[in-house]
Each structure stands twice: as C-alpha cells, then as structure tokens.
Length: 156
Image (tube, rainbow, N blue to C red; front, side, top):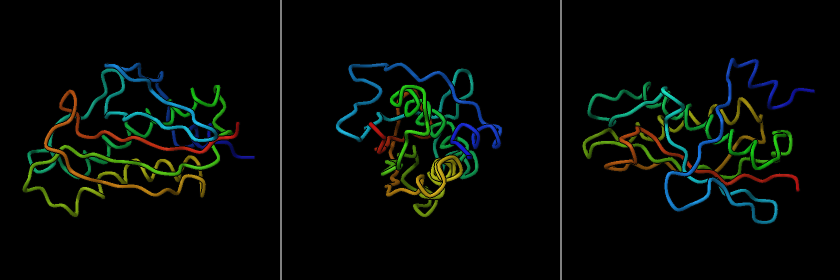
C-alpha cells in the first residue's frame, strides 16, 4: 500500500520540523475531525523564497515558494495526526496568499499557488484535491513570497 510518507520519499521530499509560532497563535487547532492549520510561509531553515510577483519574482520561483509552504503544511498535518500521515482523510481547503505588486498579472496568482496544490495531490492522491482561494497581498511576514493555510479532515 502506498502511504503519504512513501509518496514523499518517491518525490524526493523531506518534511521539516513543524514551525513554531512566531506570535500569539498556535500552529493548528483540531475541532472534531477537522484540523485548521495556521498560515505556513515559504521558508524552511535557510531555504526561503522572498520577494514580490511583478517585482523580480517569477511564477516559477513563486511555485517553488508554494512548495516550501506545502511541506510546512504537511509537517503540521503530521504533528496533528500524532506522526501518522495516513490519518489524513482529505485536504479540504487551502488559502493562498502571494506577495505581489498591484501590476502583477492576476492570472499568475493561481499558478503560483498550484505549487502547493500539486504537492497535495502528489502526496495524498485524490484525497489531496481541495477547494482553495489564491489572492495577492501587498506584503507578507518576513517578506516571504507565499503564505498558505489549510483545513484538513483527519481520522480521530
């Protein structure tokens, strides 16, 4: 049986240690069988993607940023599931913010967040298909390019 951990390994992806909060919030909240994961930024250790779409940041770099956010989200999912990603029943929704200039091509914003969406489907299969939004923001914390939050259904 292929597990999310197997898929991560097949993709050559390694999960980071779940990021600790940098302000007055918690990384996730479990309510019933839903996990609400706080926004995860495009930074893992020294690996980070900063900048604005429309001001030097390409769509491809933005997608790389969204991939970092995806790995941070999955790390939080794993923590919420007691270390067992097979307890993830469904990625319900993603909310994606892309730091962008006002003249950035708005059609590119969803393309950037696809960097996260594609990882969710690759790791969780059909259970990774989700509803989402993708919007631009004039600034994001620490000047990161992307921040994404999630709602995930888990086995309890």
